Image 1 (cartoon, helix red, strand yellow):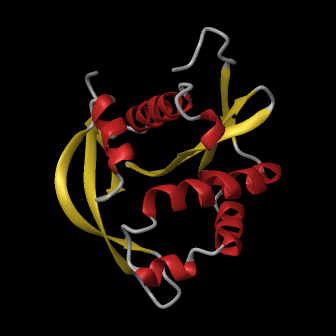
Image 2 (cartoon, rainbow, N blue to C red; image 1 turned 30 degrees about the vertical axis):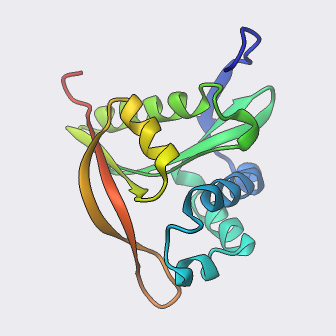
Image 3 (tube, one colour; image 1 turned 90 degrees about the horizontal axis):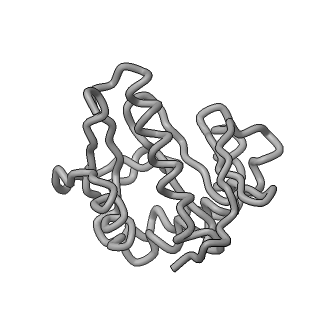
Amino acid sequence: MPGPDLQPIALRPADPADAEAVAAIWRDGWRDGHLGHVPGELVAVRTPESFAVRAGERVADTTVAVVDGAVAGFVMVVGDEVEQLYVSAAHRGAGVAGALLAYAERLGREQGHGRVWLAVVTGNARARRFYEREDWVDEGAFDYPAEGPDGPISVPCHRYVKQVQGT
């Protein structure tokens, strides 16, 4: 449990200089939550290089959380979907994920969406518990079309939603 000496969390739009840190957090977090729960075909294409390329391409969609001068986590929001939310292992349990998720909810509300949604890999119990603690509702199982080199790769997920208008 974090103690009273927690560092403040600052959120800001990502810039190209953040791409390397975002890629490392994304890669490590993705492996923590996905290995053993997604098709081997997807694991094979999620190389360190793939995260570096995608982090660089997605800077405009990314907001980073900075703690003590270092990128501690990030969120990518497109339309009403919270596409990615990851926190470095060193900063888990320190409120970073909650701050990023609250930002994503606020962004959805400001953009006029009645609700926002995200996909969680079915076997990622830690992430599912987190979203449920944050009052997100599991709408059930579905197959998420993850980007693969030869087209979408079907990934078993659960769709979580949260009402953001009128809250």
